[in-house]
Amino acid sequence: METLRRTLLRHWLWLAVNLGALWPLAQLLWDVWAGRLSVNPIADLTTRTGQAAIILLLLTLAVTPLQILGWRQVTVVRKSLGLWAFFYASVHLLIFVGLDYGFNLDFILRDGLPQKPYIVAGLAAFLILVPLALTSTRGWMKRLGRRWKQLHRWIYLAAGLAVVHYLWVAKIDLGRPALYAVLLLLLLAVRVPGIRRVLANRRRRRPALHAGSSATRPHPRDARKPVR
Amino acid sequence: MVPIRPSEITPEHVYLNRRKFMAGAGALAGAVALAACGPSLPTTGEGATAAEAAPEAAAAASAVPLEDLPPALAHAEPFASQQTDELGDPLNAYDEITHYNNYYEFTTDKQGVARLAEKFHSRPWTVKVGGLVNNPKTYDVDDLLRKFPQEERIYRLRCVEAWSMVIPWVGFPLAELLKEVEPKSEARFVRFRSIFRPDEMPGQQARWLEWPYTEGLRLDEAMHPLTILATGMYGKLLVNANGAPLRLVVPWKYGFKSIKAIVEIDLVEKMPVSTWMAAAPNEYGFYANVNPNVDHSRWSQATERRVGELGRRETLMFNGYEEEVAHLYDGMDLRANF
Image (cartoon, rainbow over all chains, first blue to last red; front, side, top):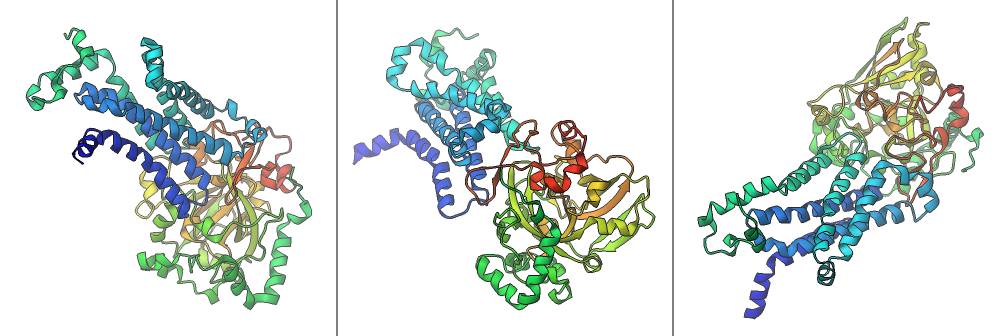
């Protein structure tokens, strides 16, 4: 019992994130079952799975900034967040091709969809996510070595394309896609070396706050870098 | 291609058919509609909840007692003389049409409109008809619906977002009204304006479009027998979410041309700039004819999703009213005049 408790405590973040990522799906299925979608349910399903995918992509990209700010443990959920983002993107695409177009290639081509900018952006984002999801295992990480990291930096482009895809599909009310665009830019800005250094230094100057906690221990990777 | 039988598209057919039906089965009609639509529908035009949430609005709407309304509008329950349009496609349910609305004056959330529109006051209401006319007039909307014979028109409505519905409108040809005010010879276009009432229409507090909503038609489009001013739907007065008390319906054009809650109709010489043209001139043209061959700049218009169906169907030229309206655009480049 005690071991279970300790295991749960150690893995609470991982559990919370995975249960949380299931939430949009559960809510969606519940609303489908209860008949609470609008009279245009395919539009609702498409929007909601797309939103979930973008939000999870942004959360995946929030892991590094949180690390920089000193929350090291958050690393354990990055892979889960990324895979859930891919899951919702896949469902989103499947709804579009299957439910919306009934796998009718003729209709898809007649609608000229391969040439439509928002489809191109969305499809490109999805295609980038495929190899990232496939190589998310420890085995691939070892096999690819330092190239693994280079490969997975493509998530920046995928997230950018996903947000552009959403901006492009909006008719006039850009509130939500614009919000995601701003958040994405902030998350990417934190990764710019100069900004990153400033944030990391700020954290180290306040060691009392985290005294004794693992968060104050410099990460080996940071330790190698000279801090100016 | 879906076979279109032009002989069946004439609105007179629908109208006459309805009258015949009414003569024989007037008393039965309400019961039939009730049985067909089931008990889950709102019991009044404003919805059962409207009476609780906004008693004053409900009172305003019920200020027109059923017995004072023309027969085409005097239904307590949703009523349509036919269950399909002339192409054989089923009508969308009353509930669907009244709870899925693009009406940015309230909100951009289609499902949010019905709730937010409950508090809107659509009575009393006057419409000013003027501009280049010999006989400018201001009408009370309730006089308007008694003055002109109200008829049922079962039309397809195709939204520019590529979804569509089949709707049994009640209304009268715009031409009737225009003839009465006598357009001058230099009048070439008709400009419509919606009400501006940001205290009742929260969407108007936002700046995503220029308010009040403005739309326009060329005079010959406005005079076309298919163009109606709608006062009702499903045999009842329009509910606020659908543009009460008076809206335009131009069935061969994208839905956004069908301006809602009209307070001003002016005959003008120059082509008016409609609200959507002002917002994005490269995406929303003046004509906005339903045309599967001319895409929106960001998405296709070749297919559409009929609300209530899975999958897609092909979009018909001029929304299936090609026989009736194509001649209006003879010699015009519909790509340039989109």
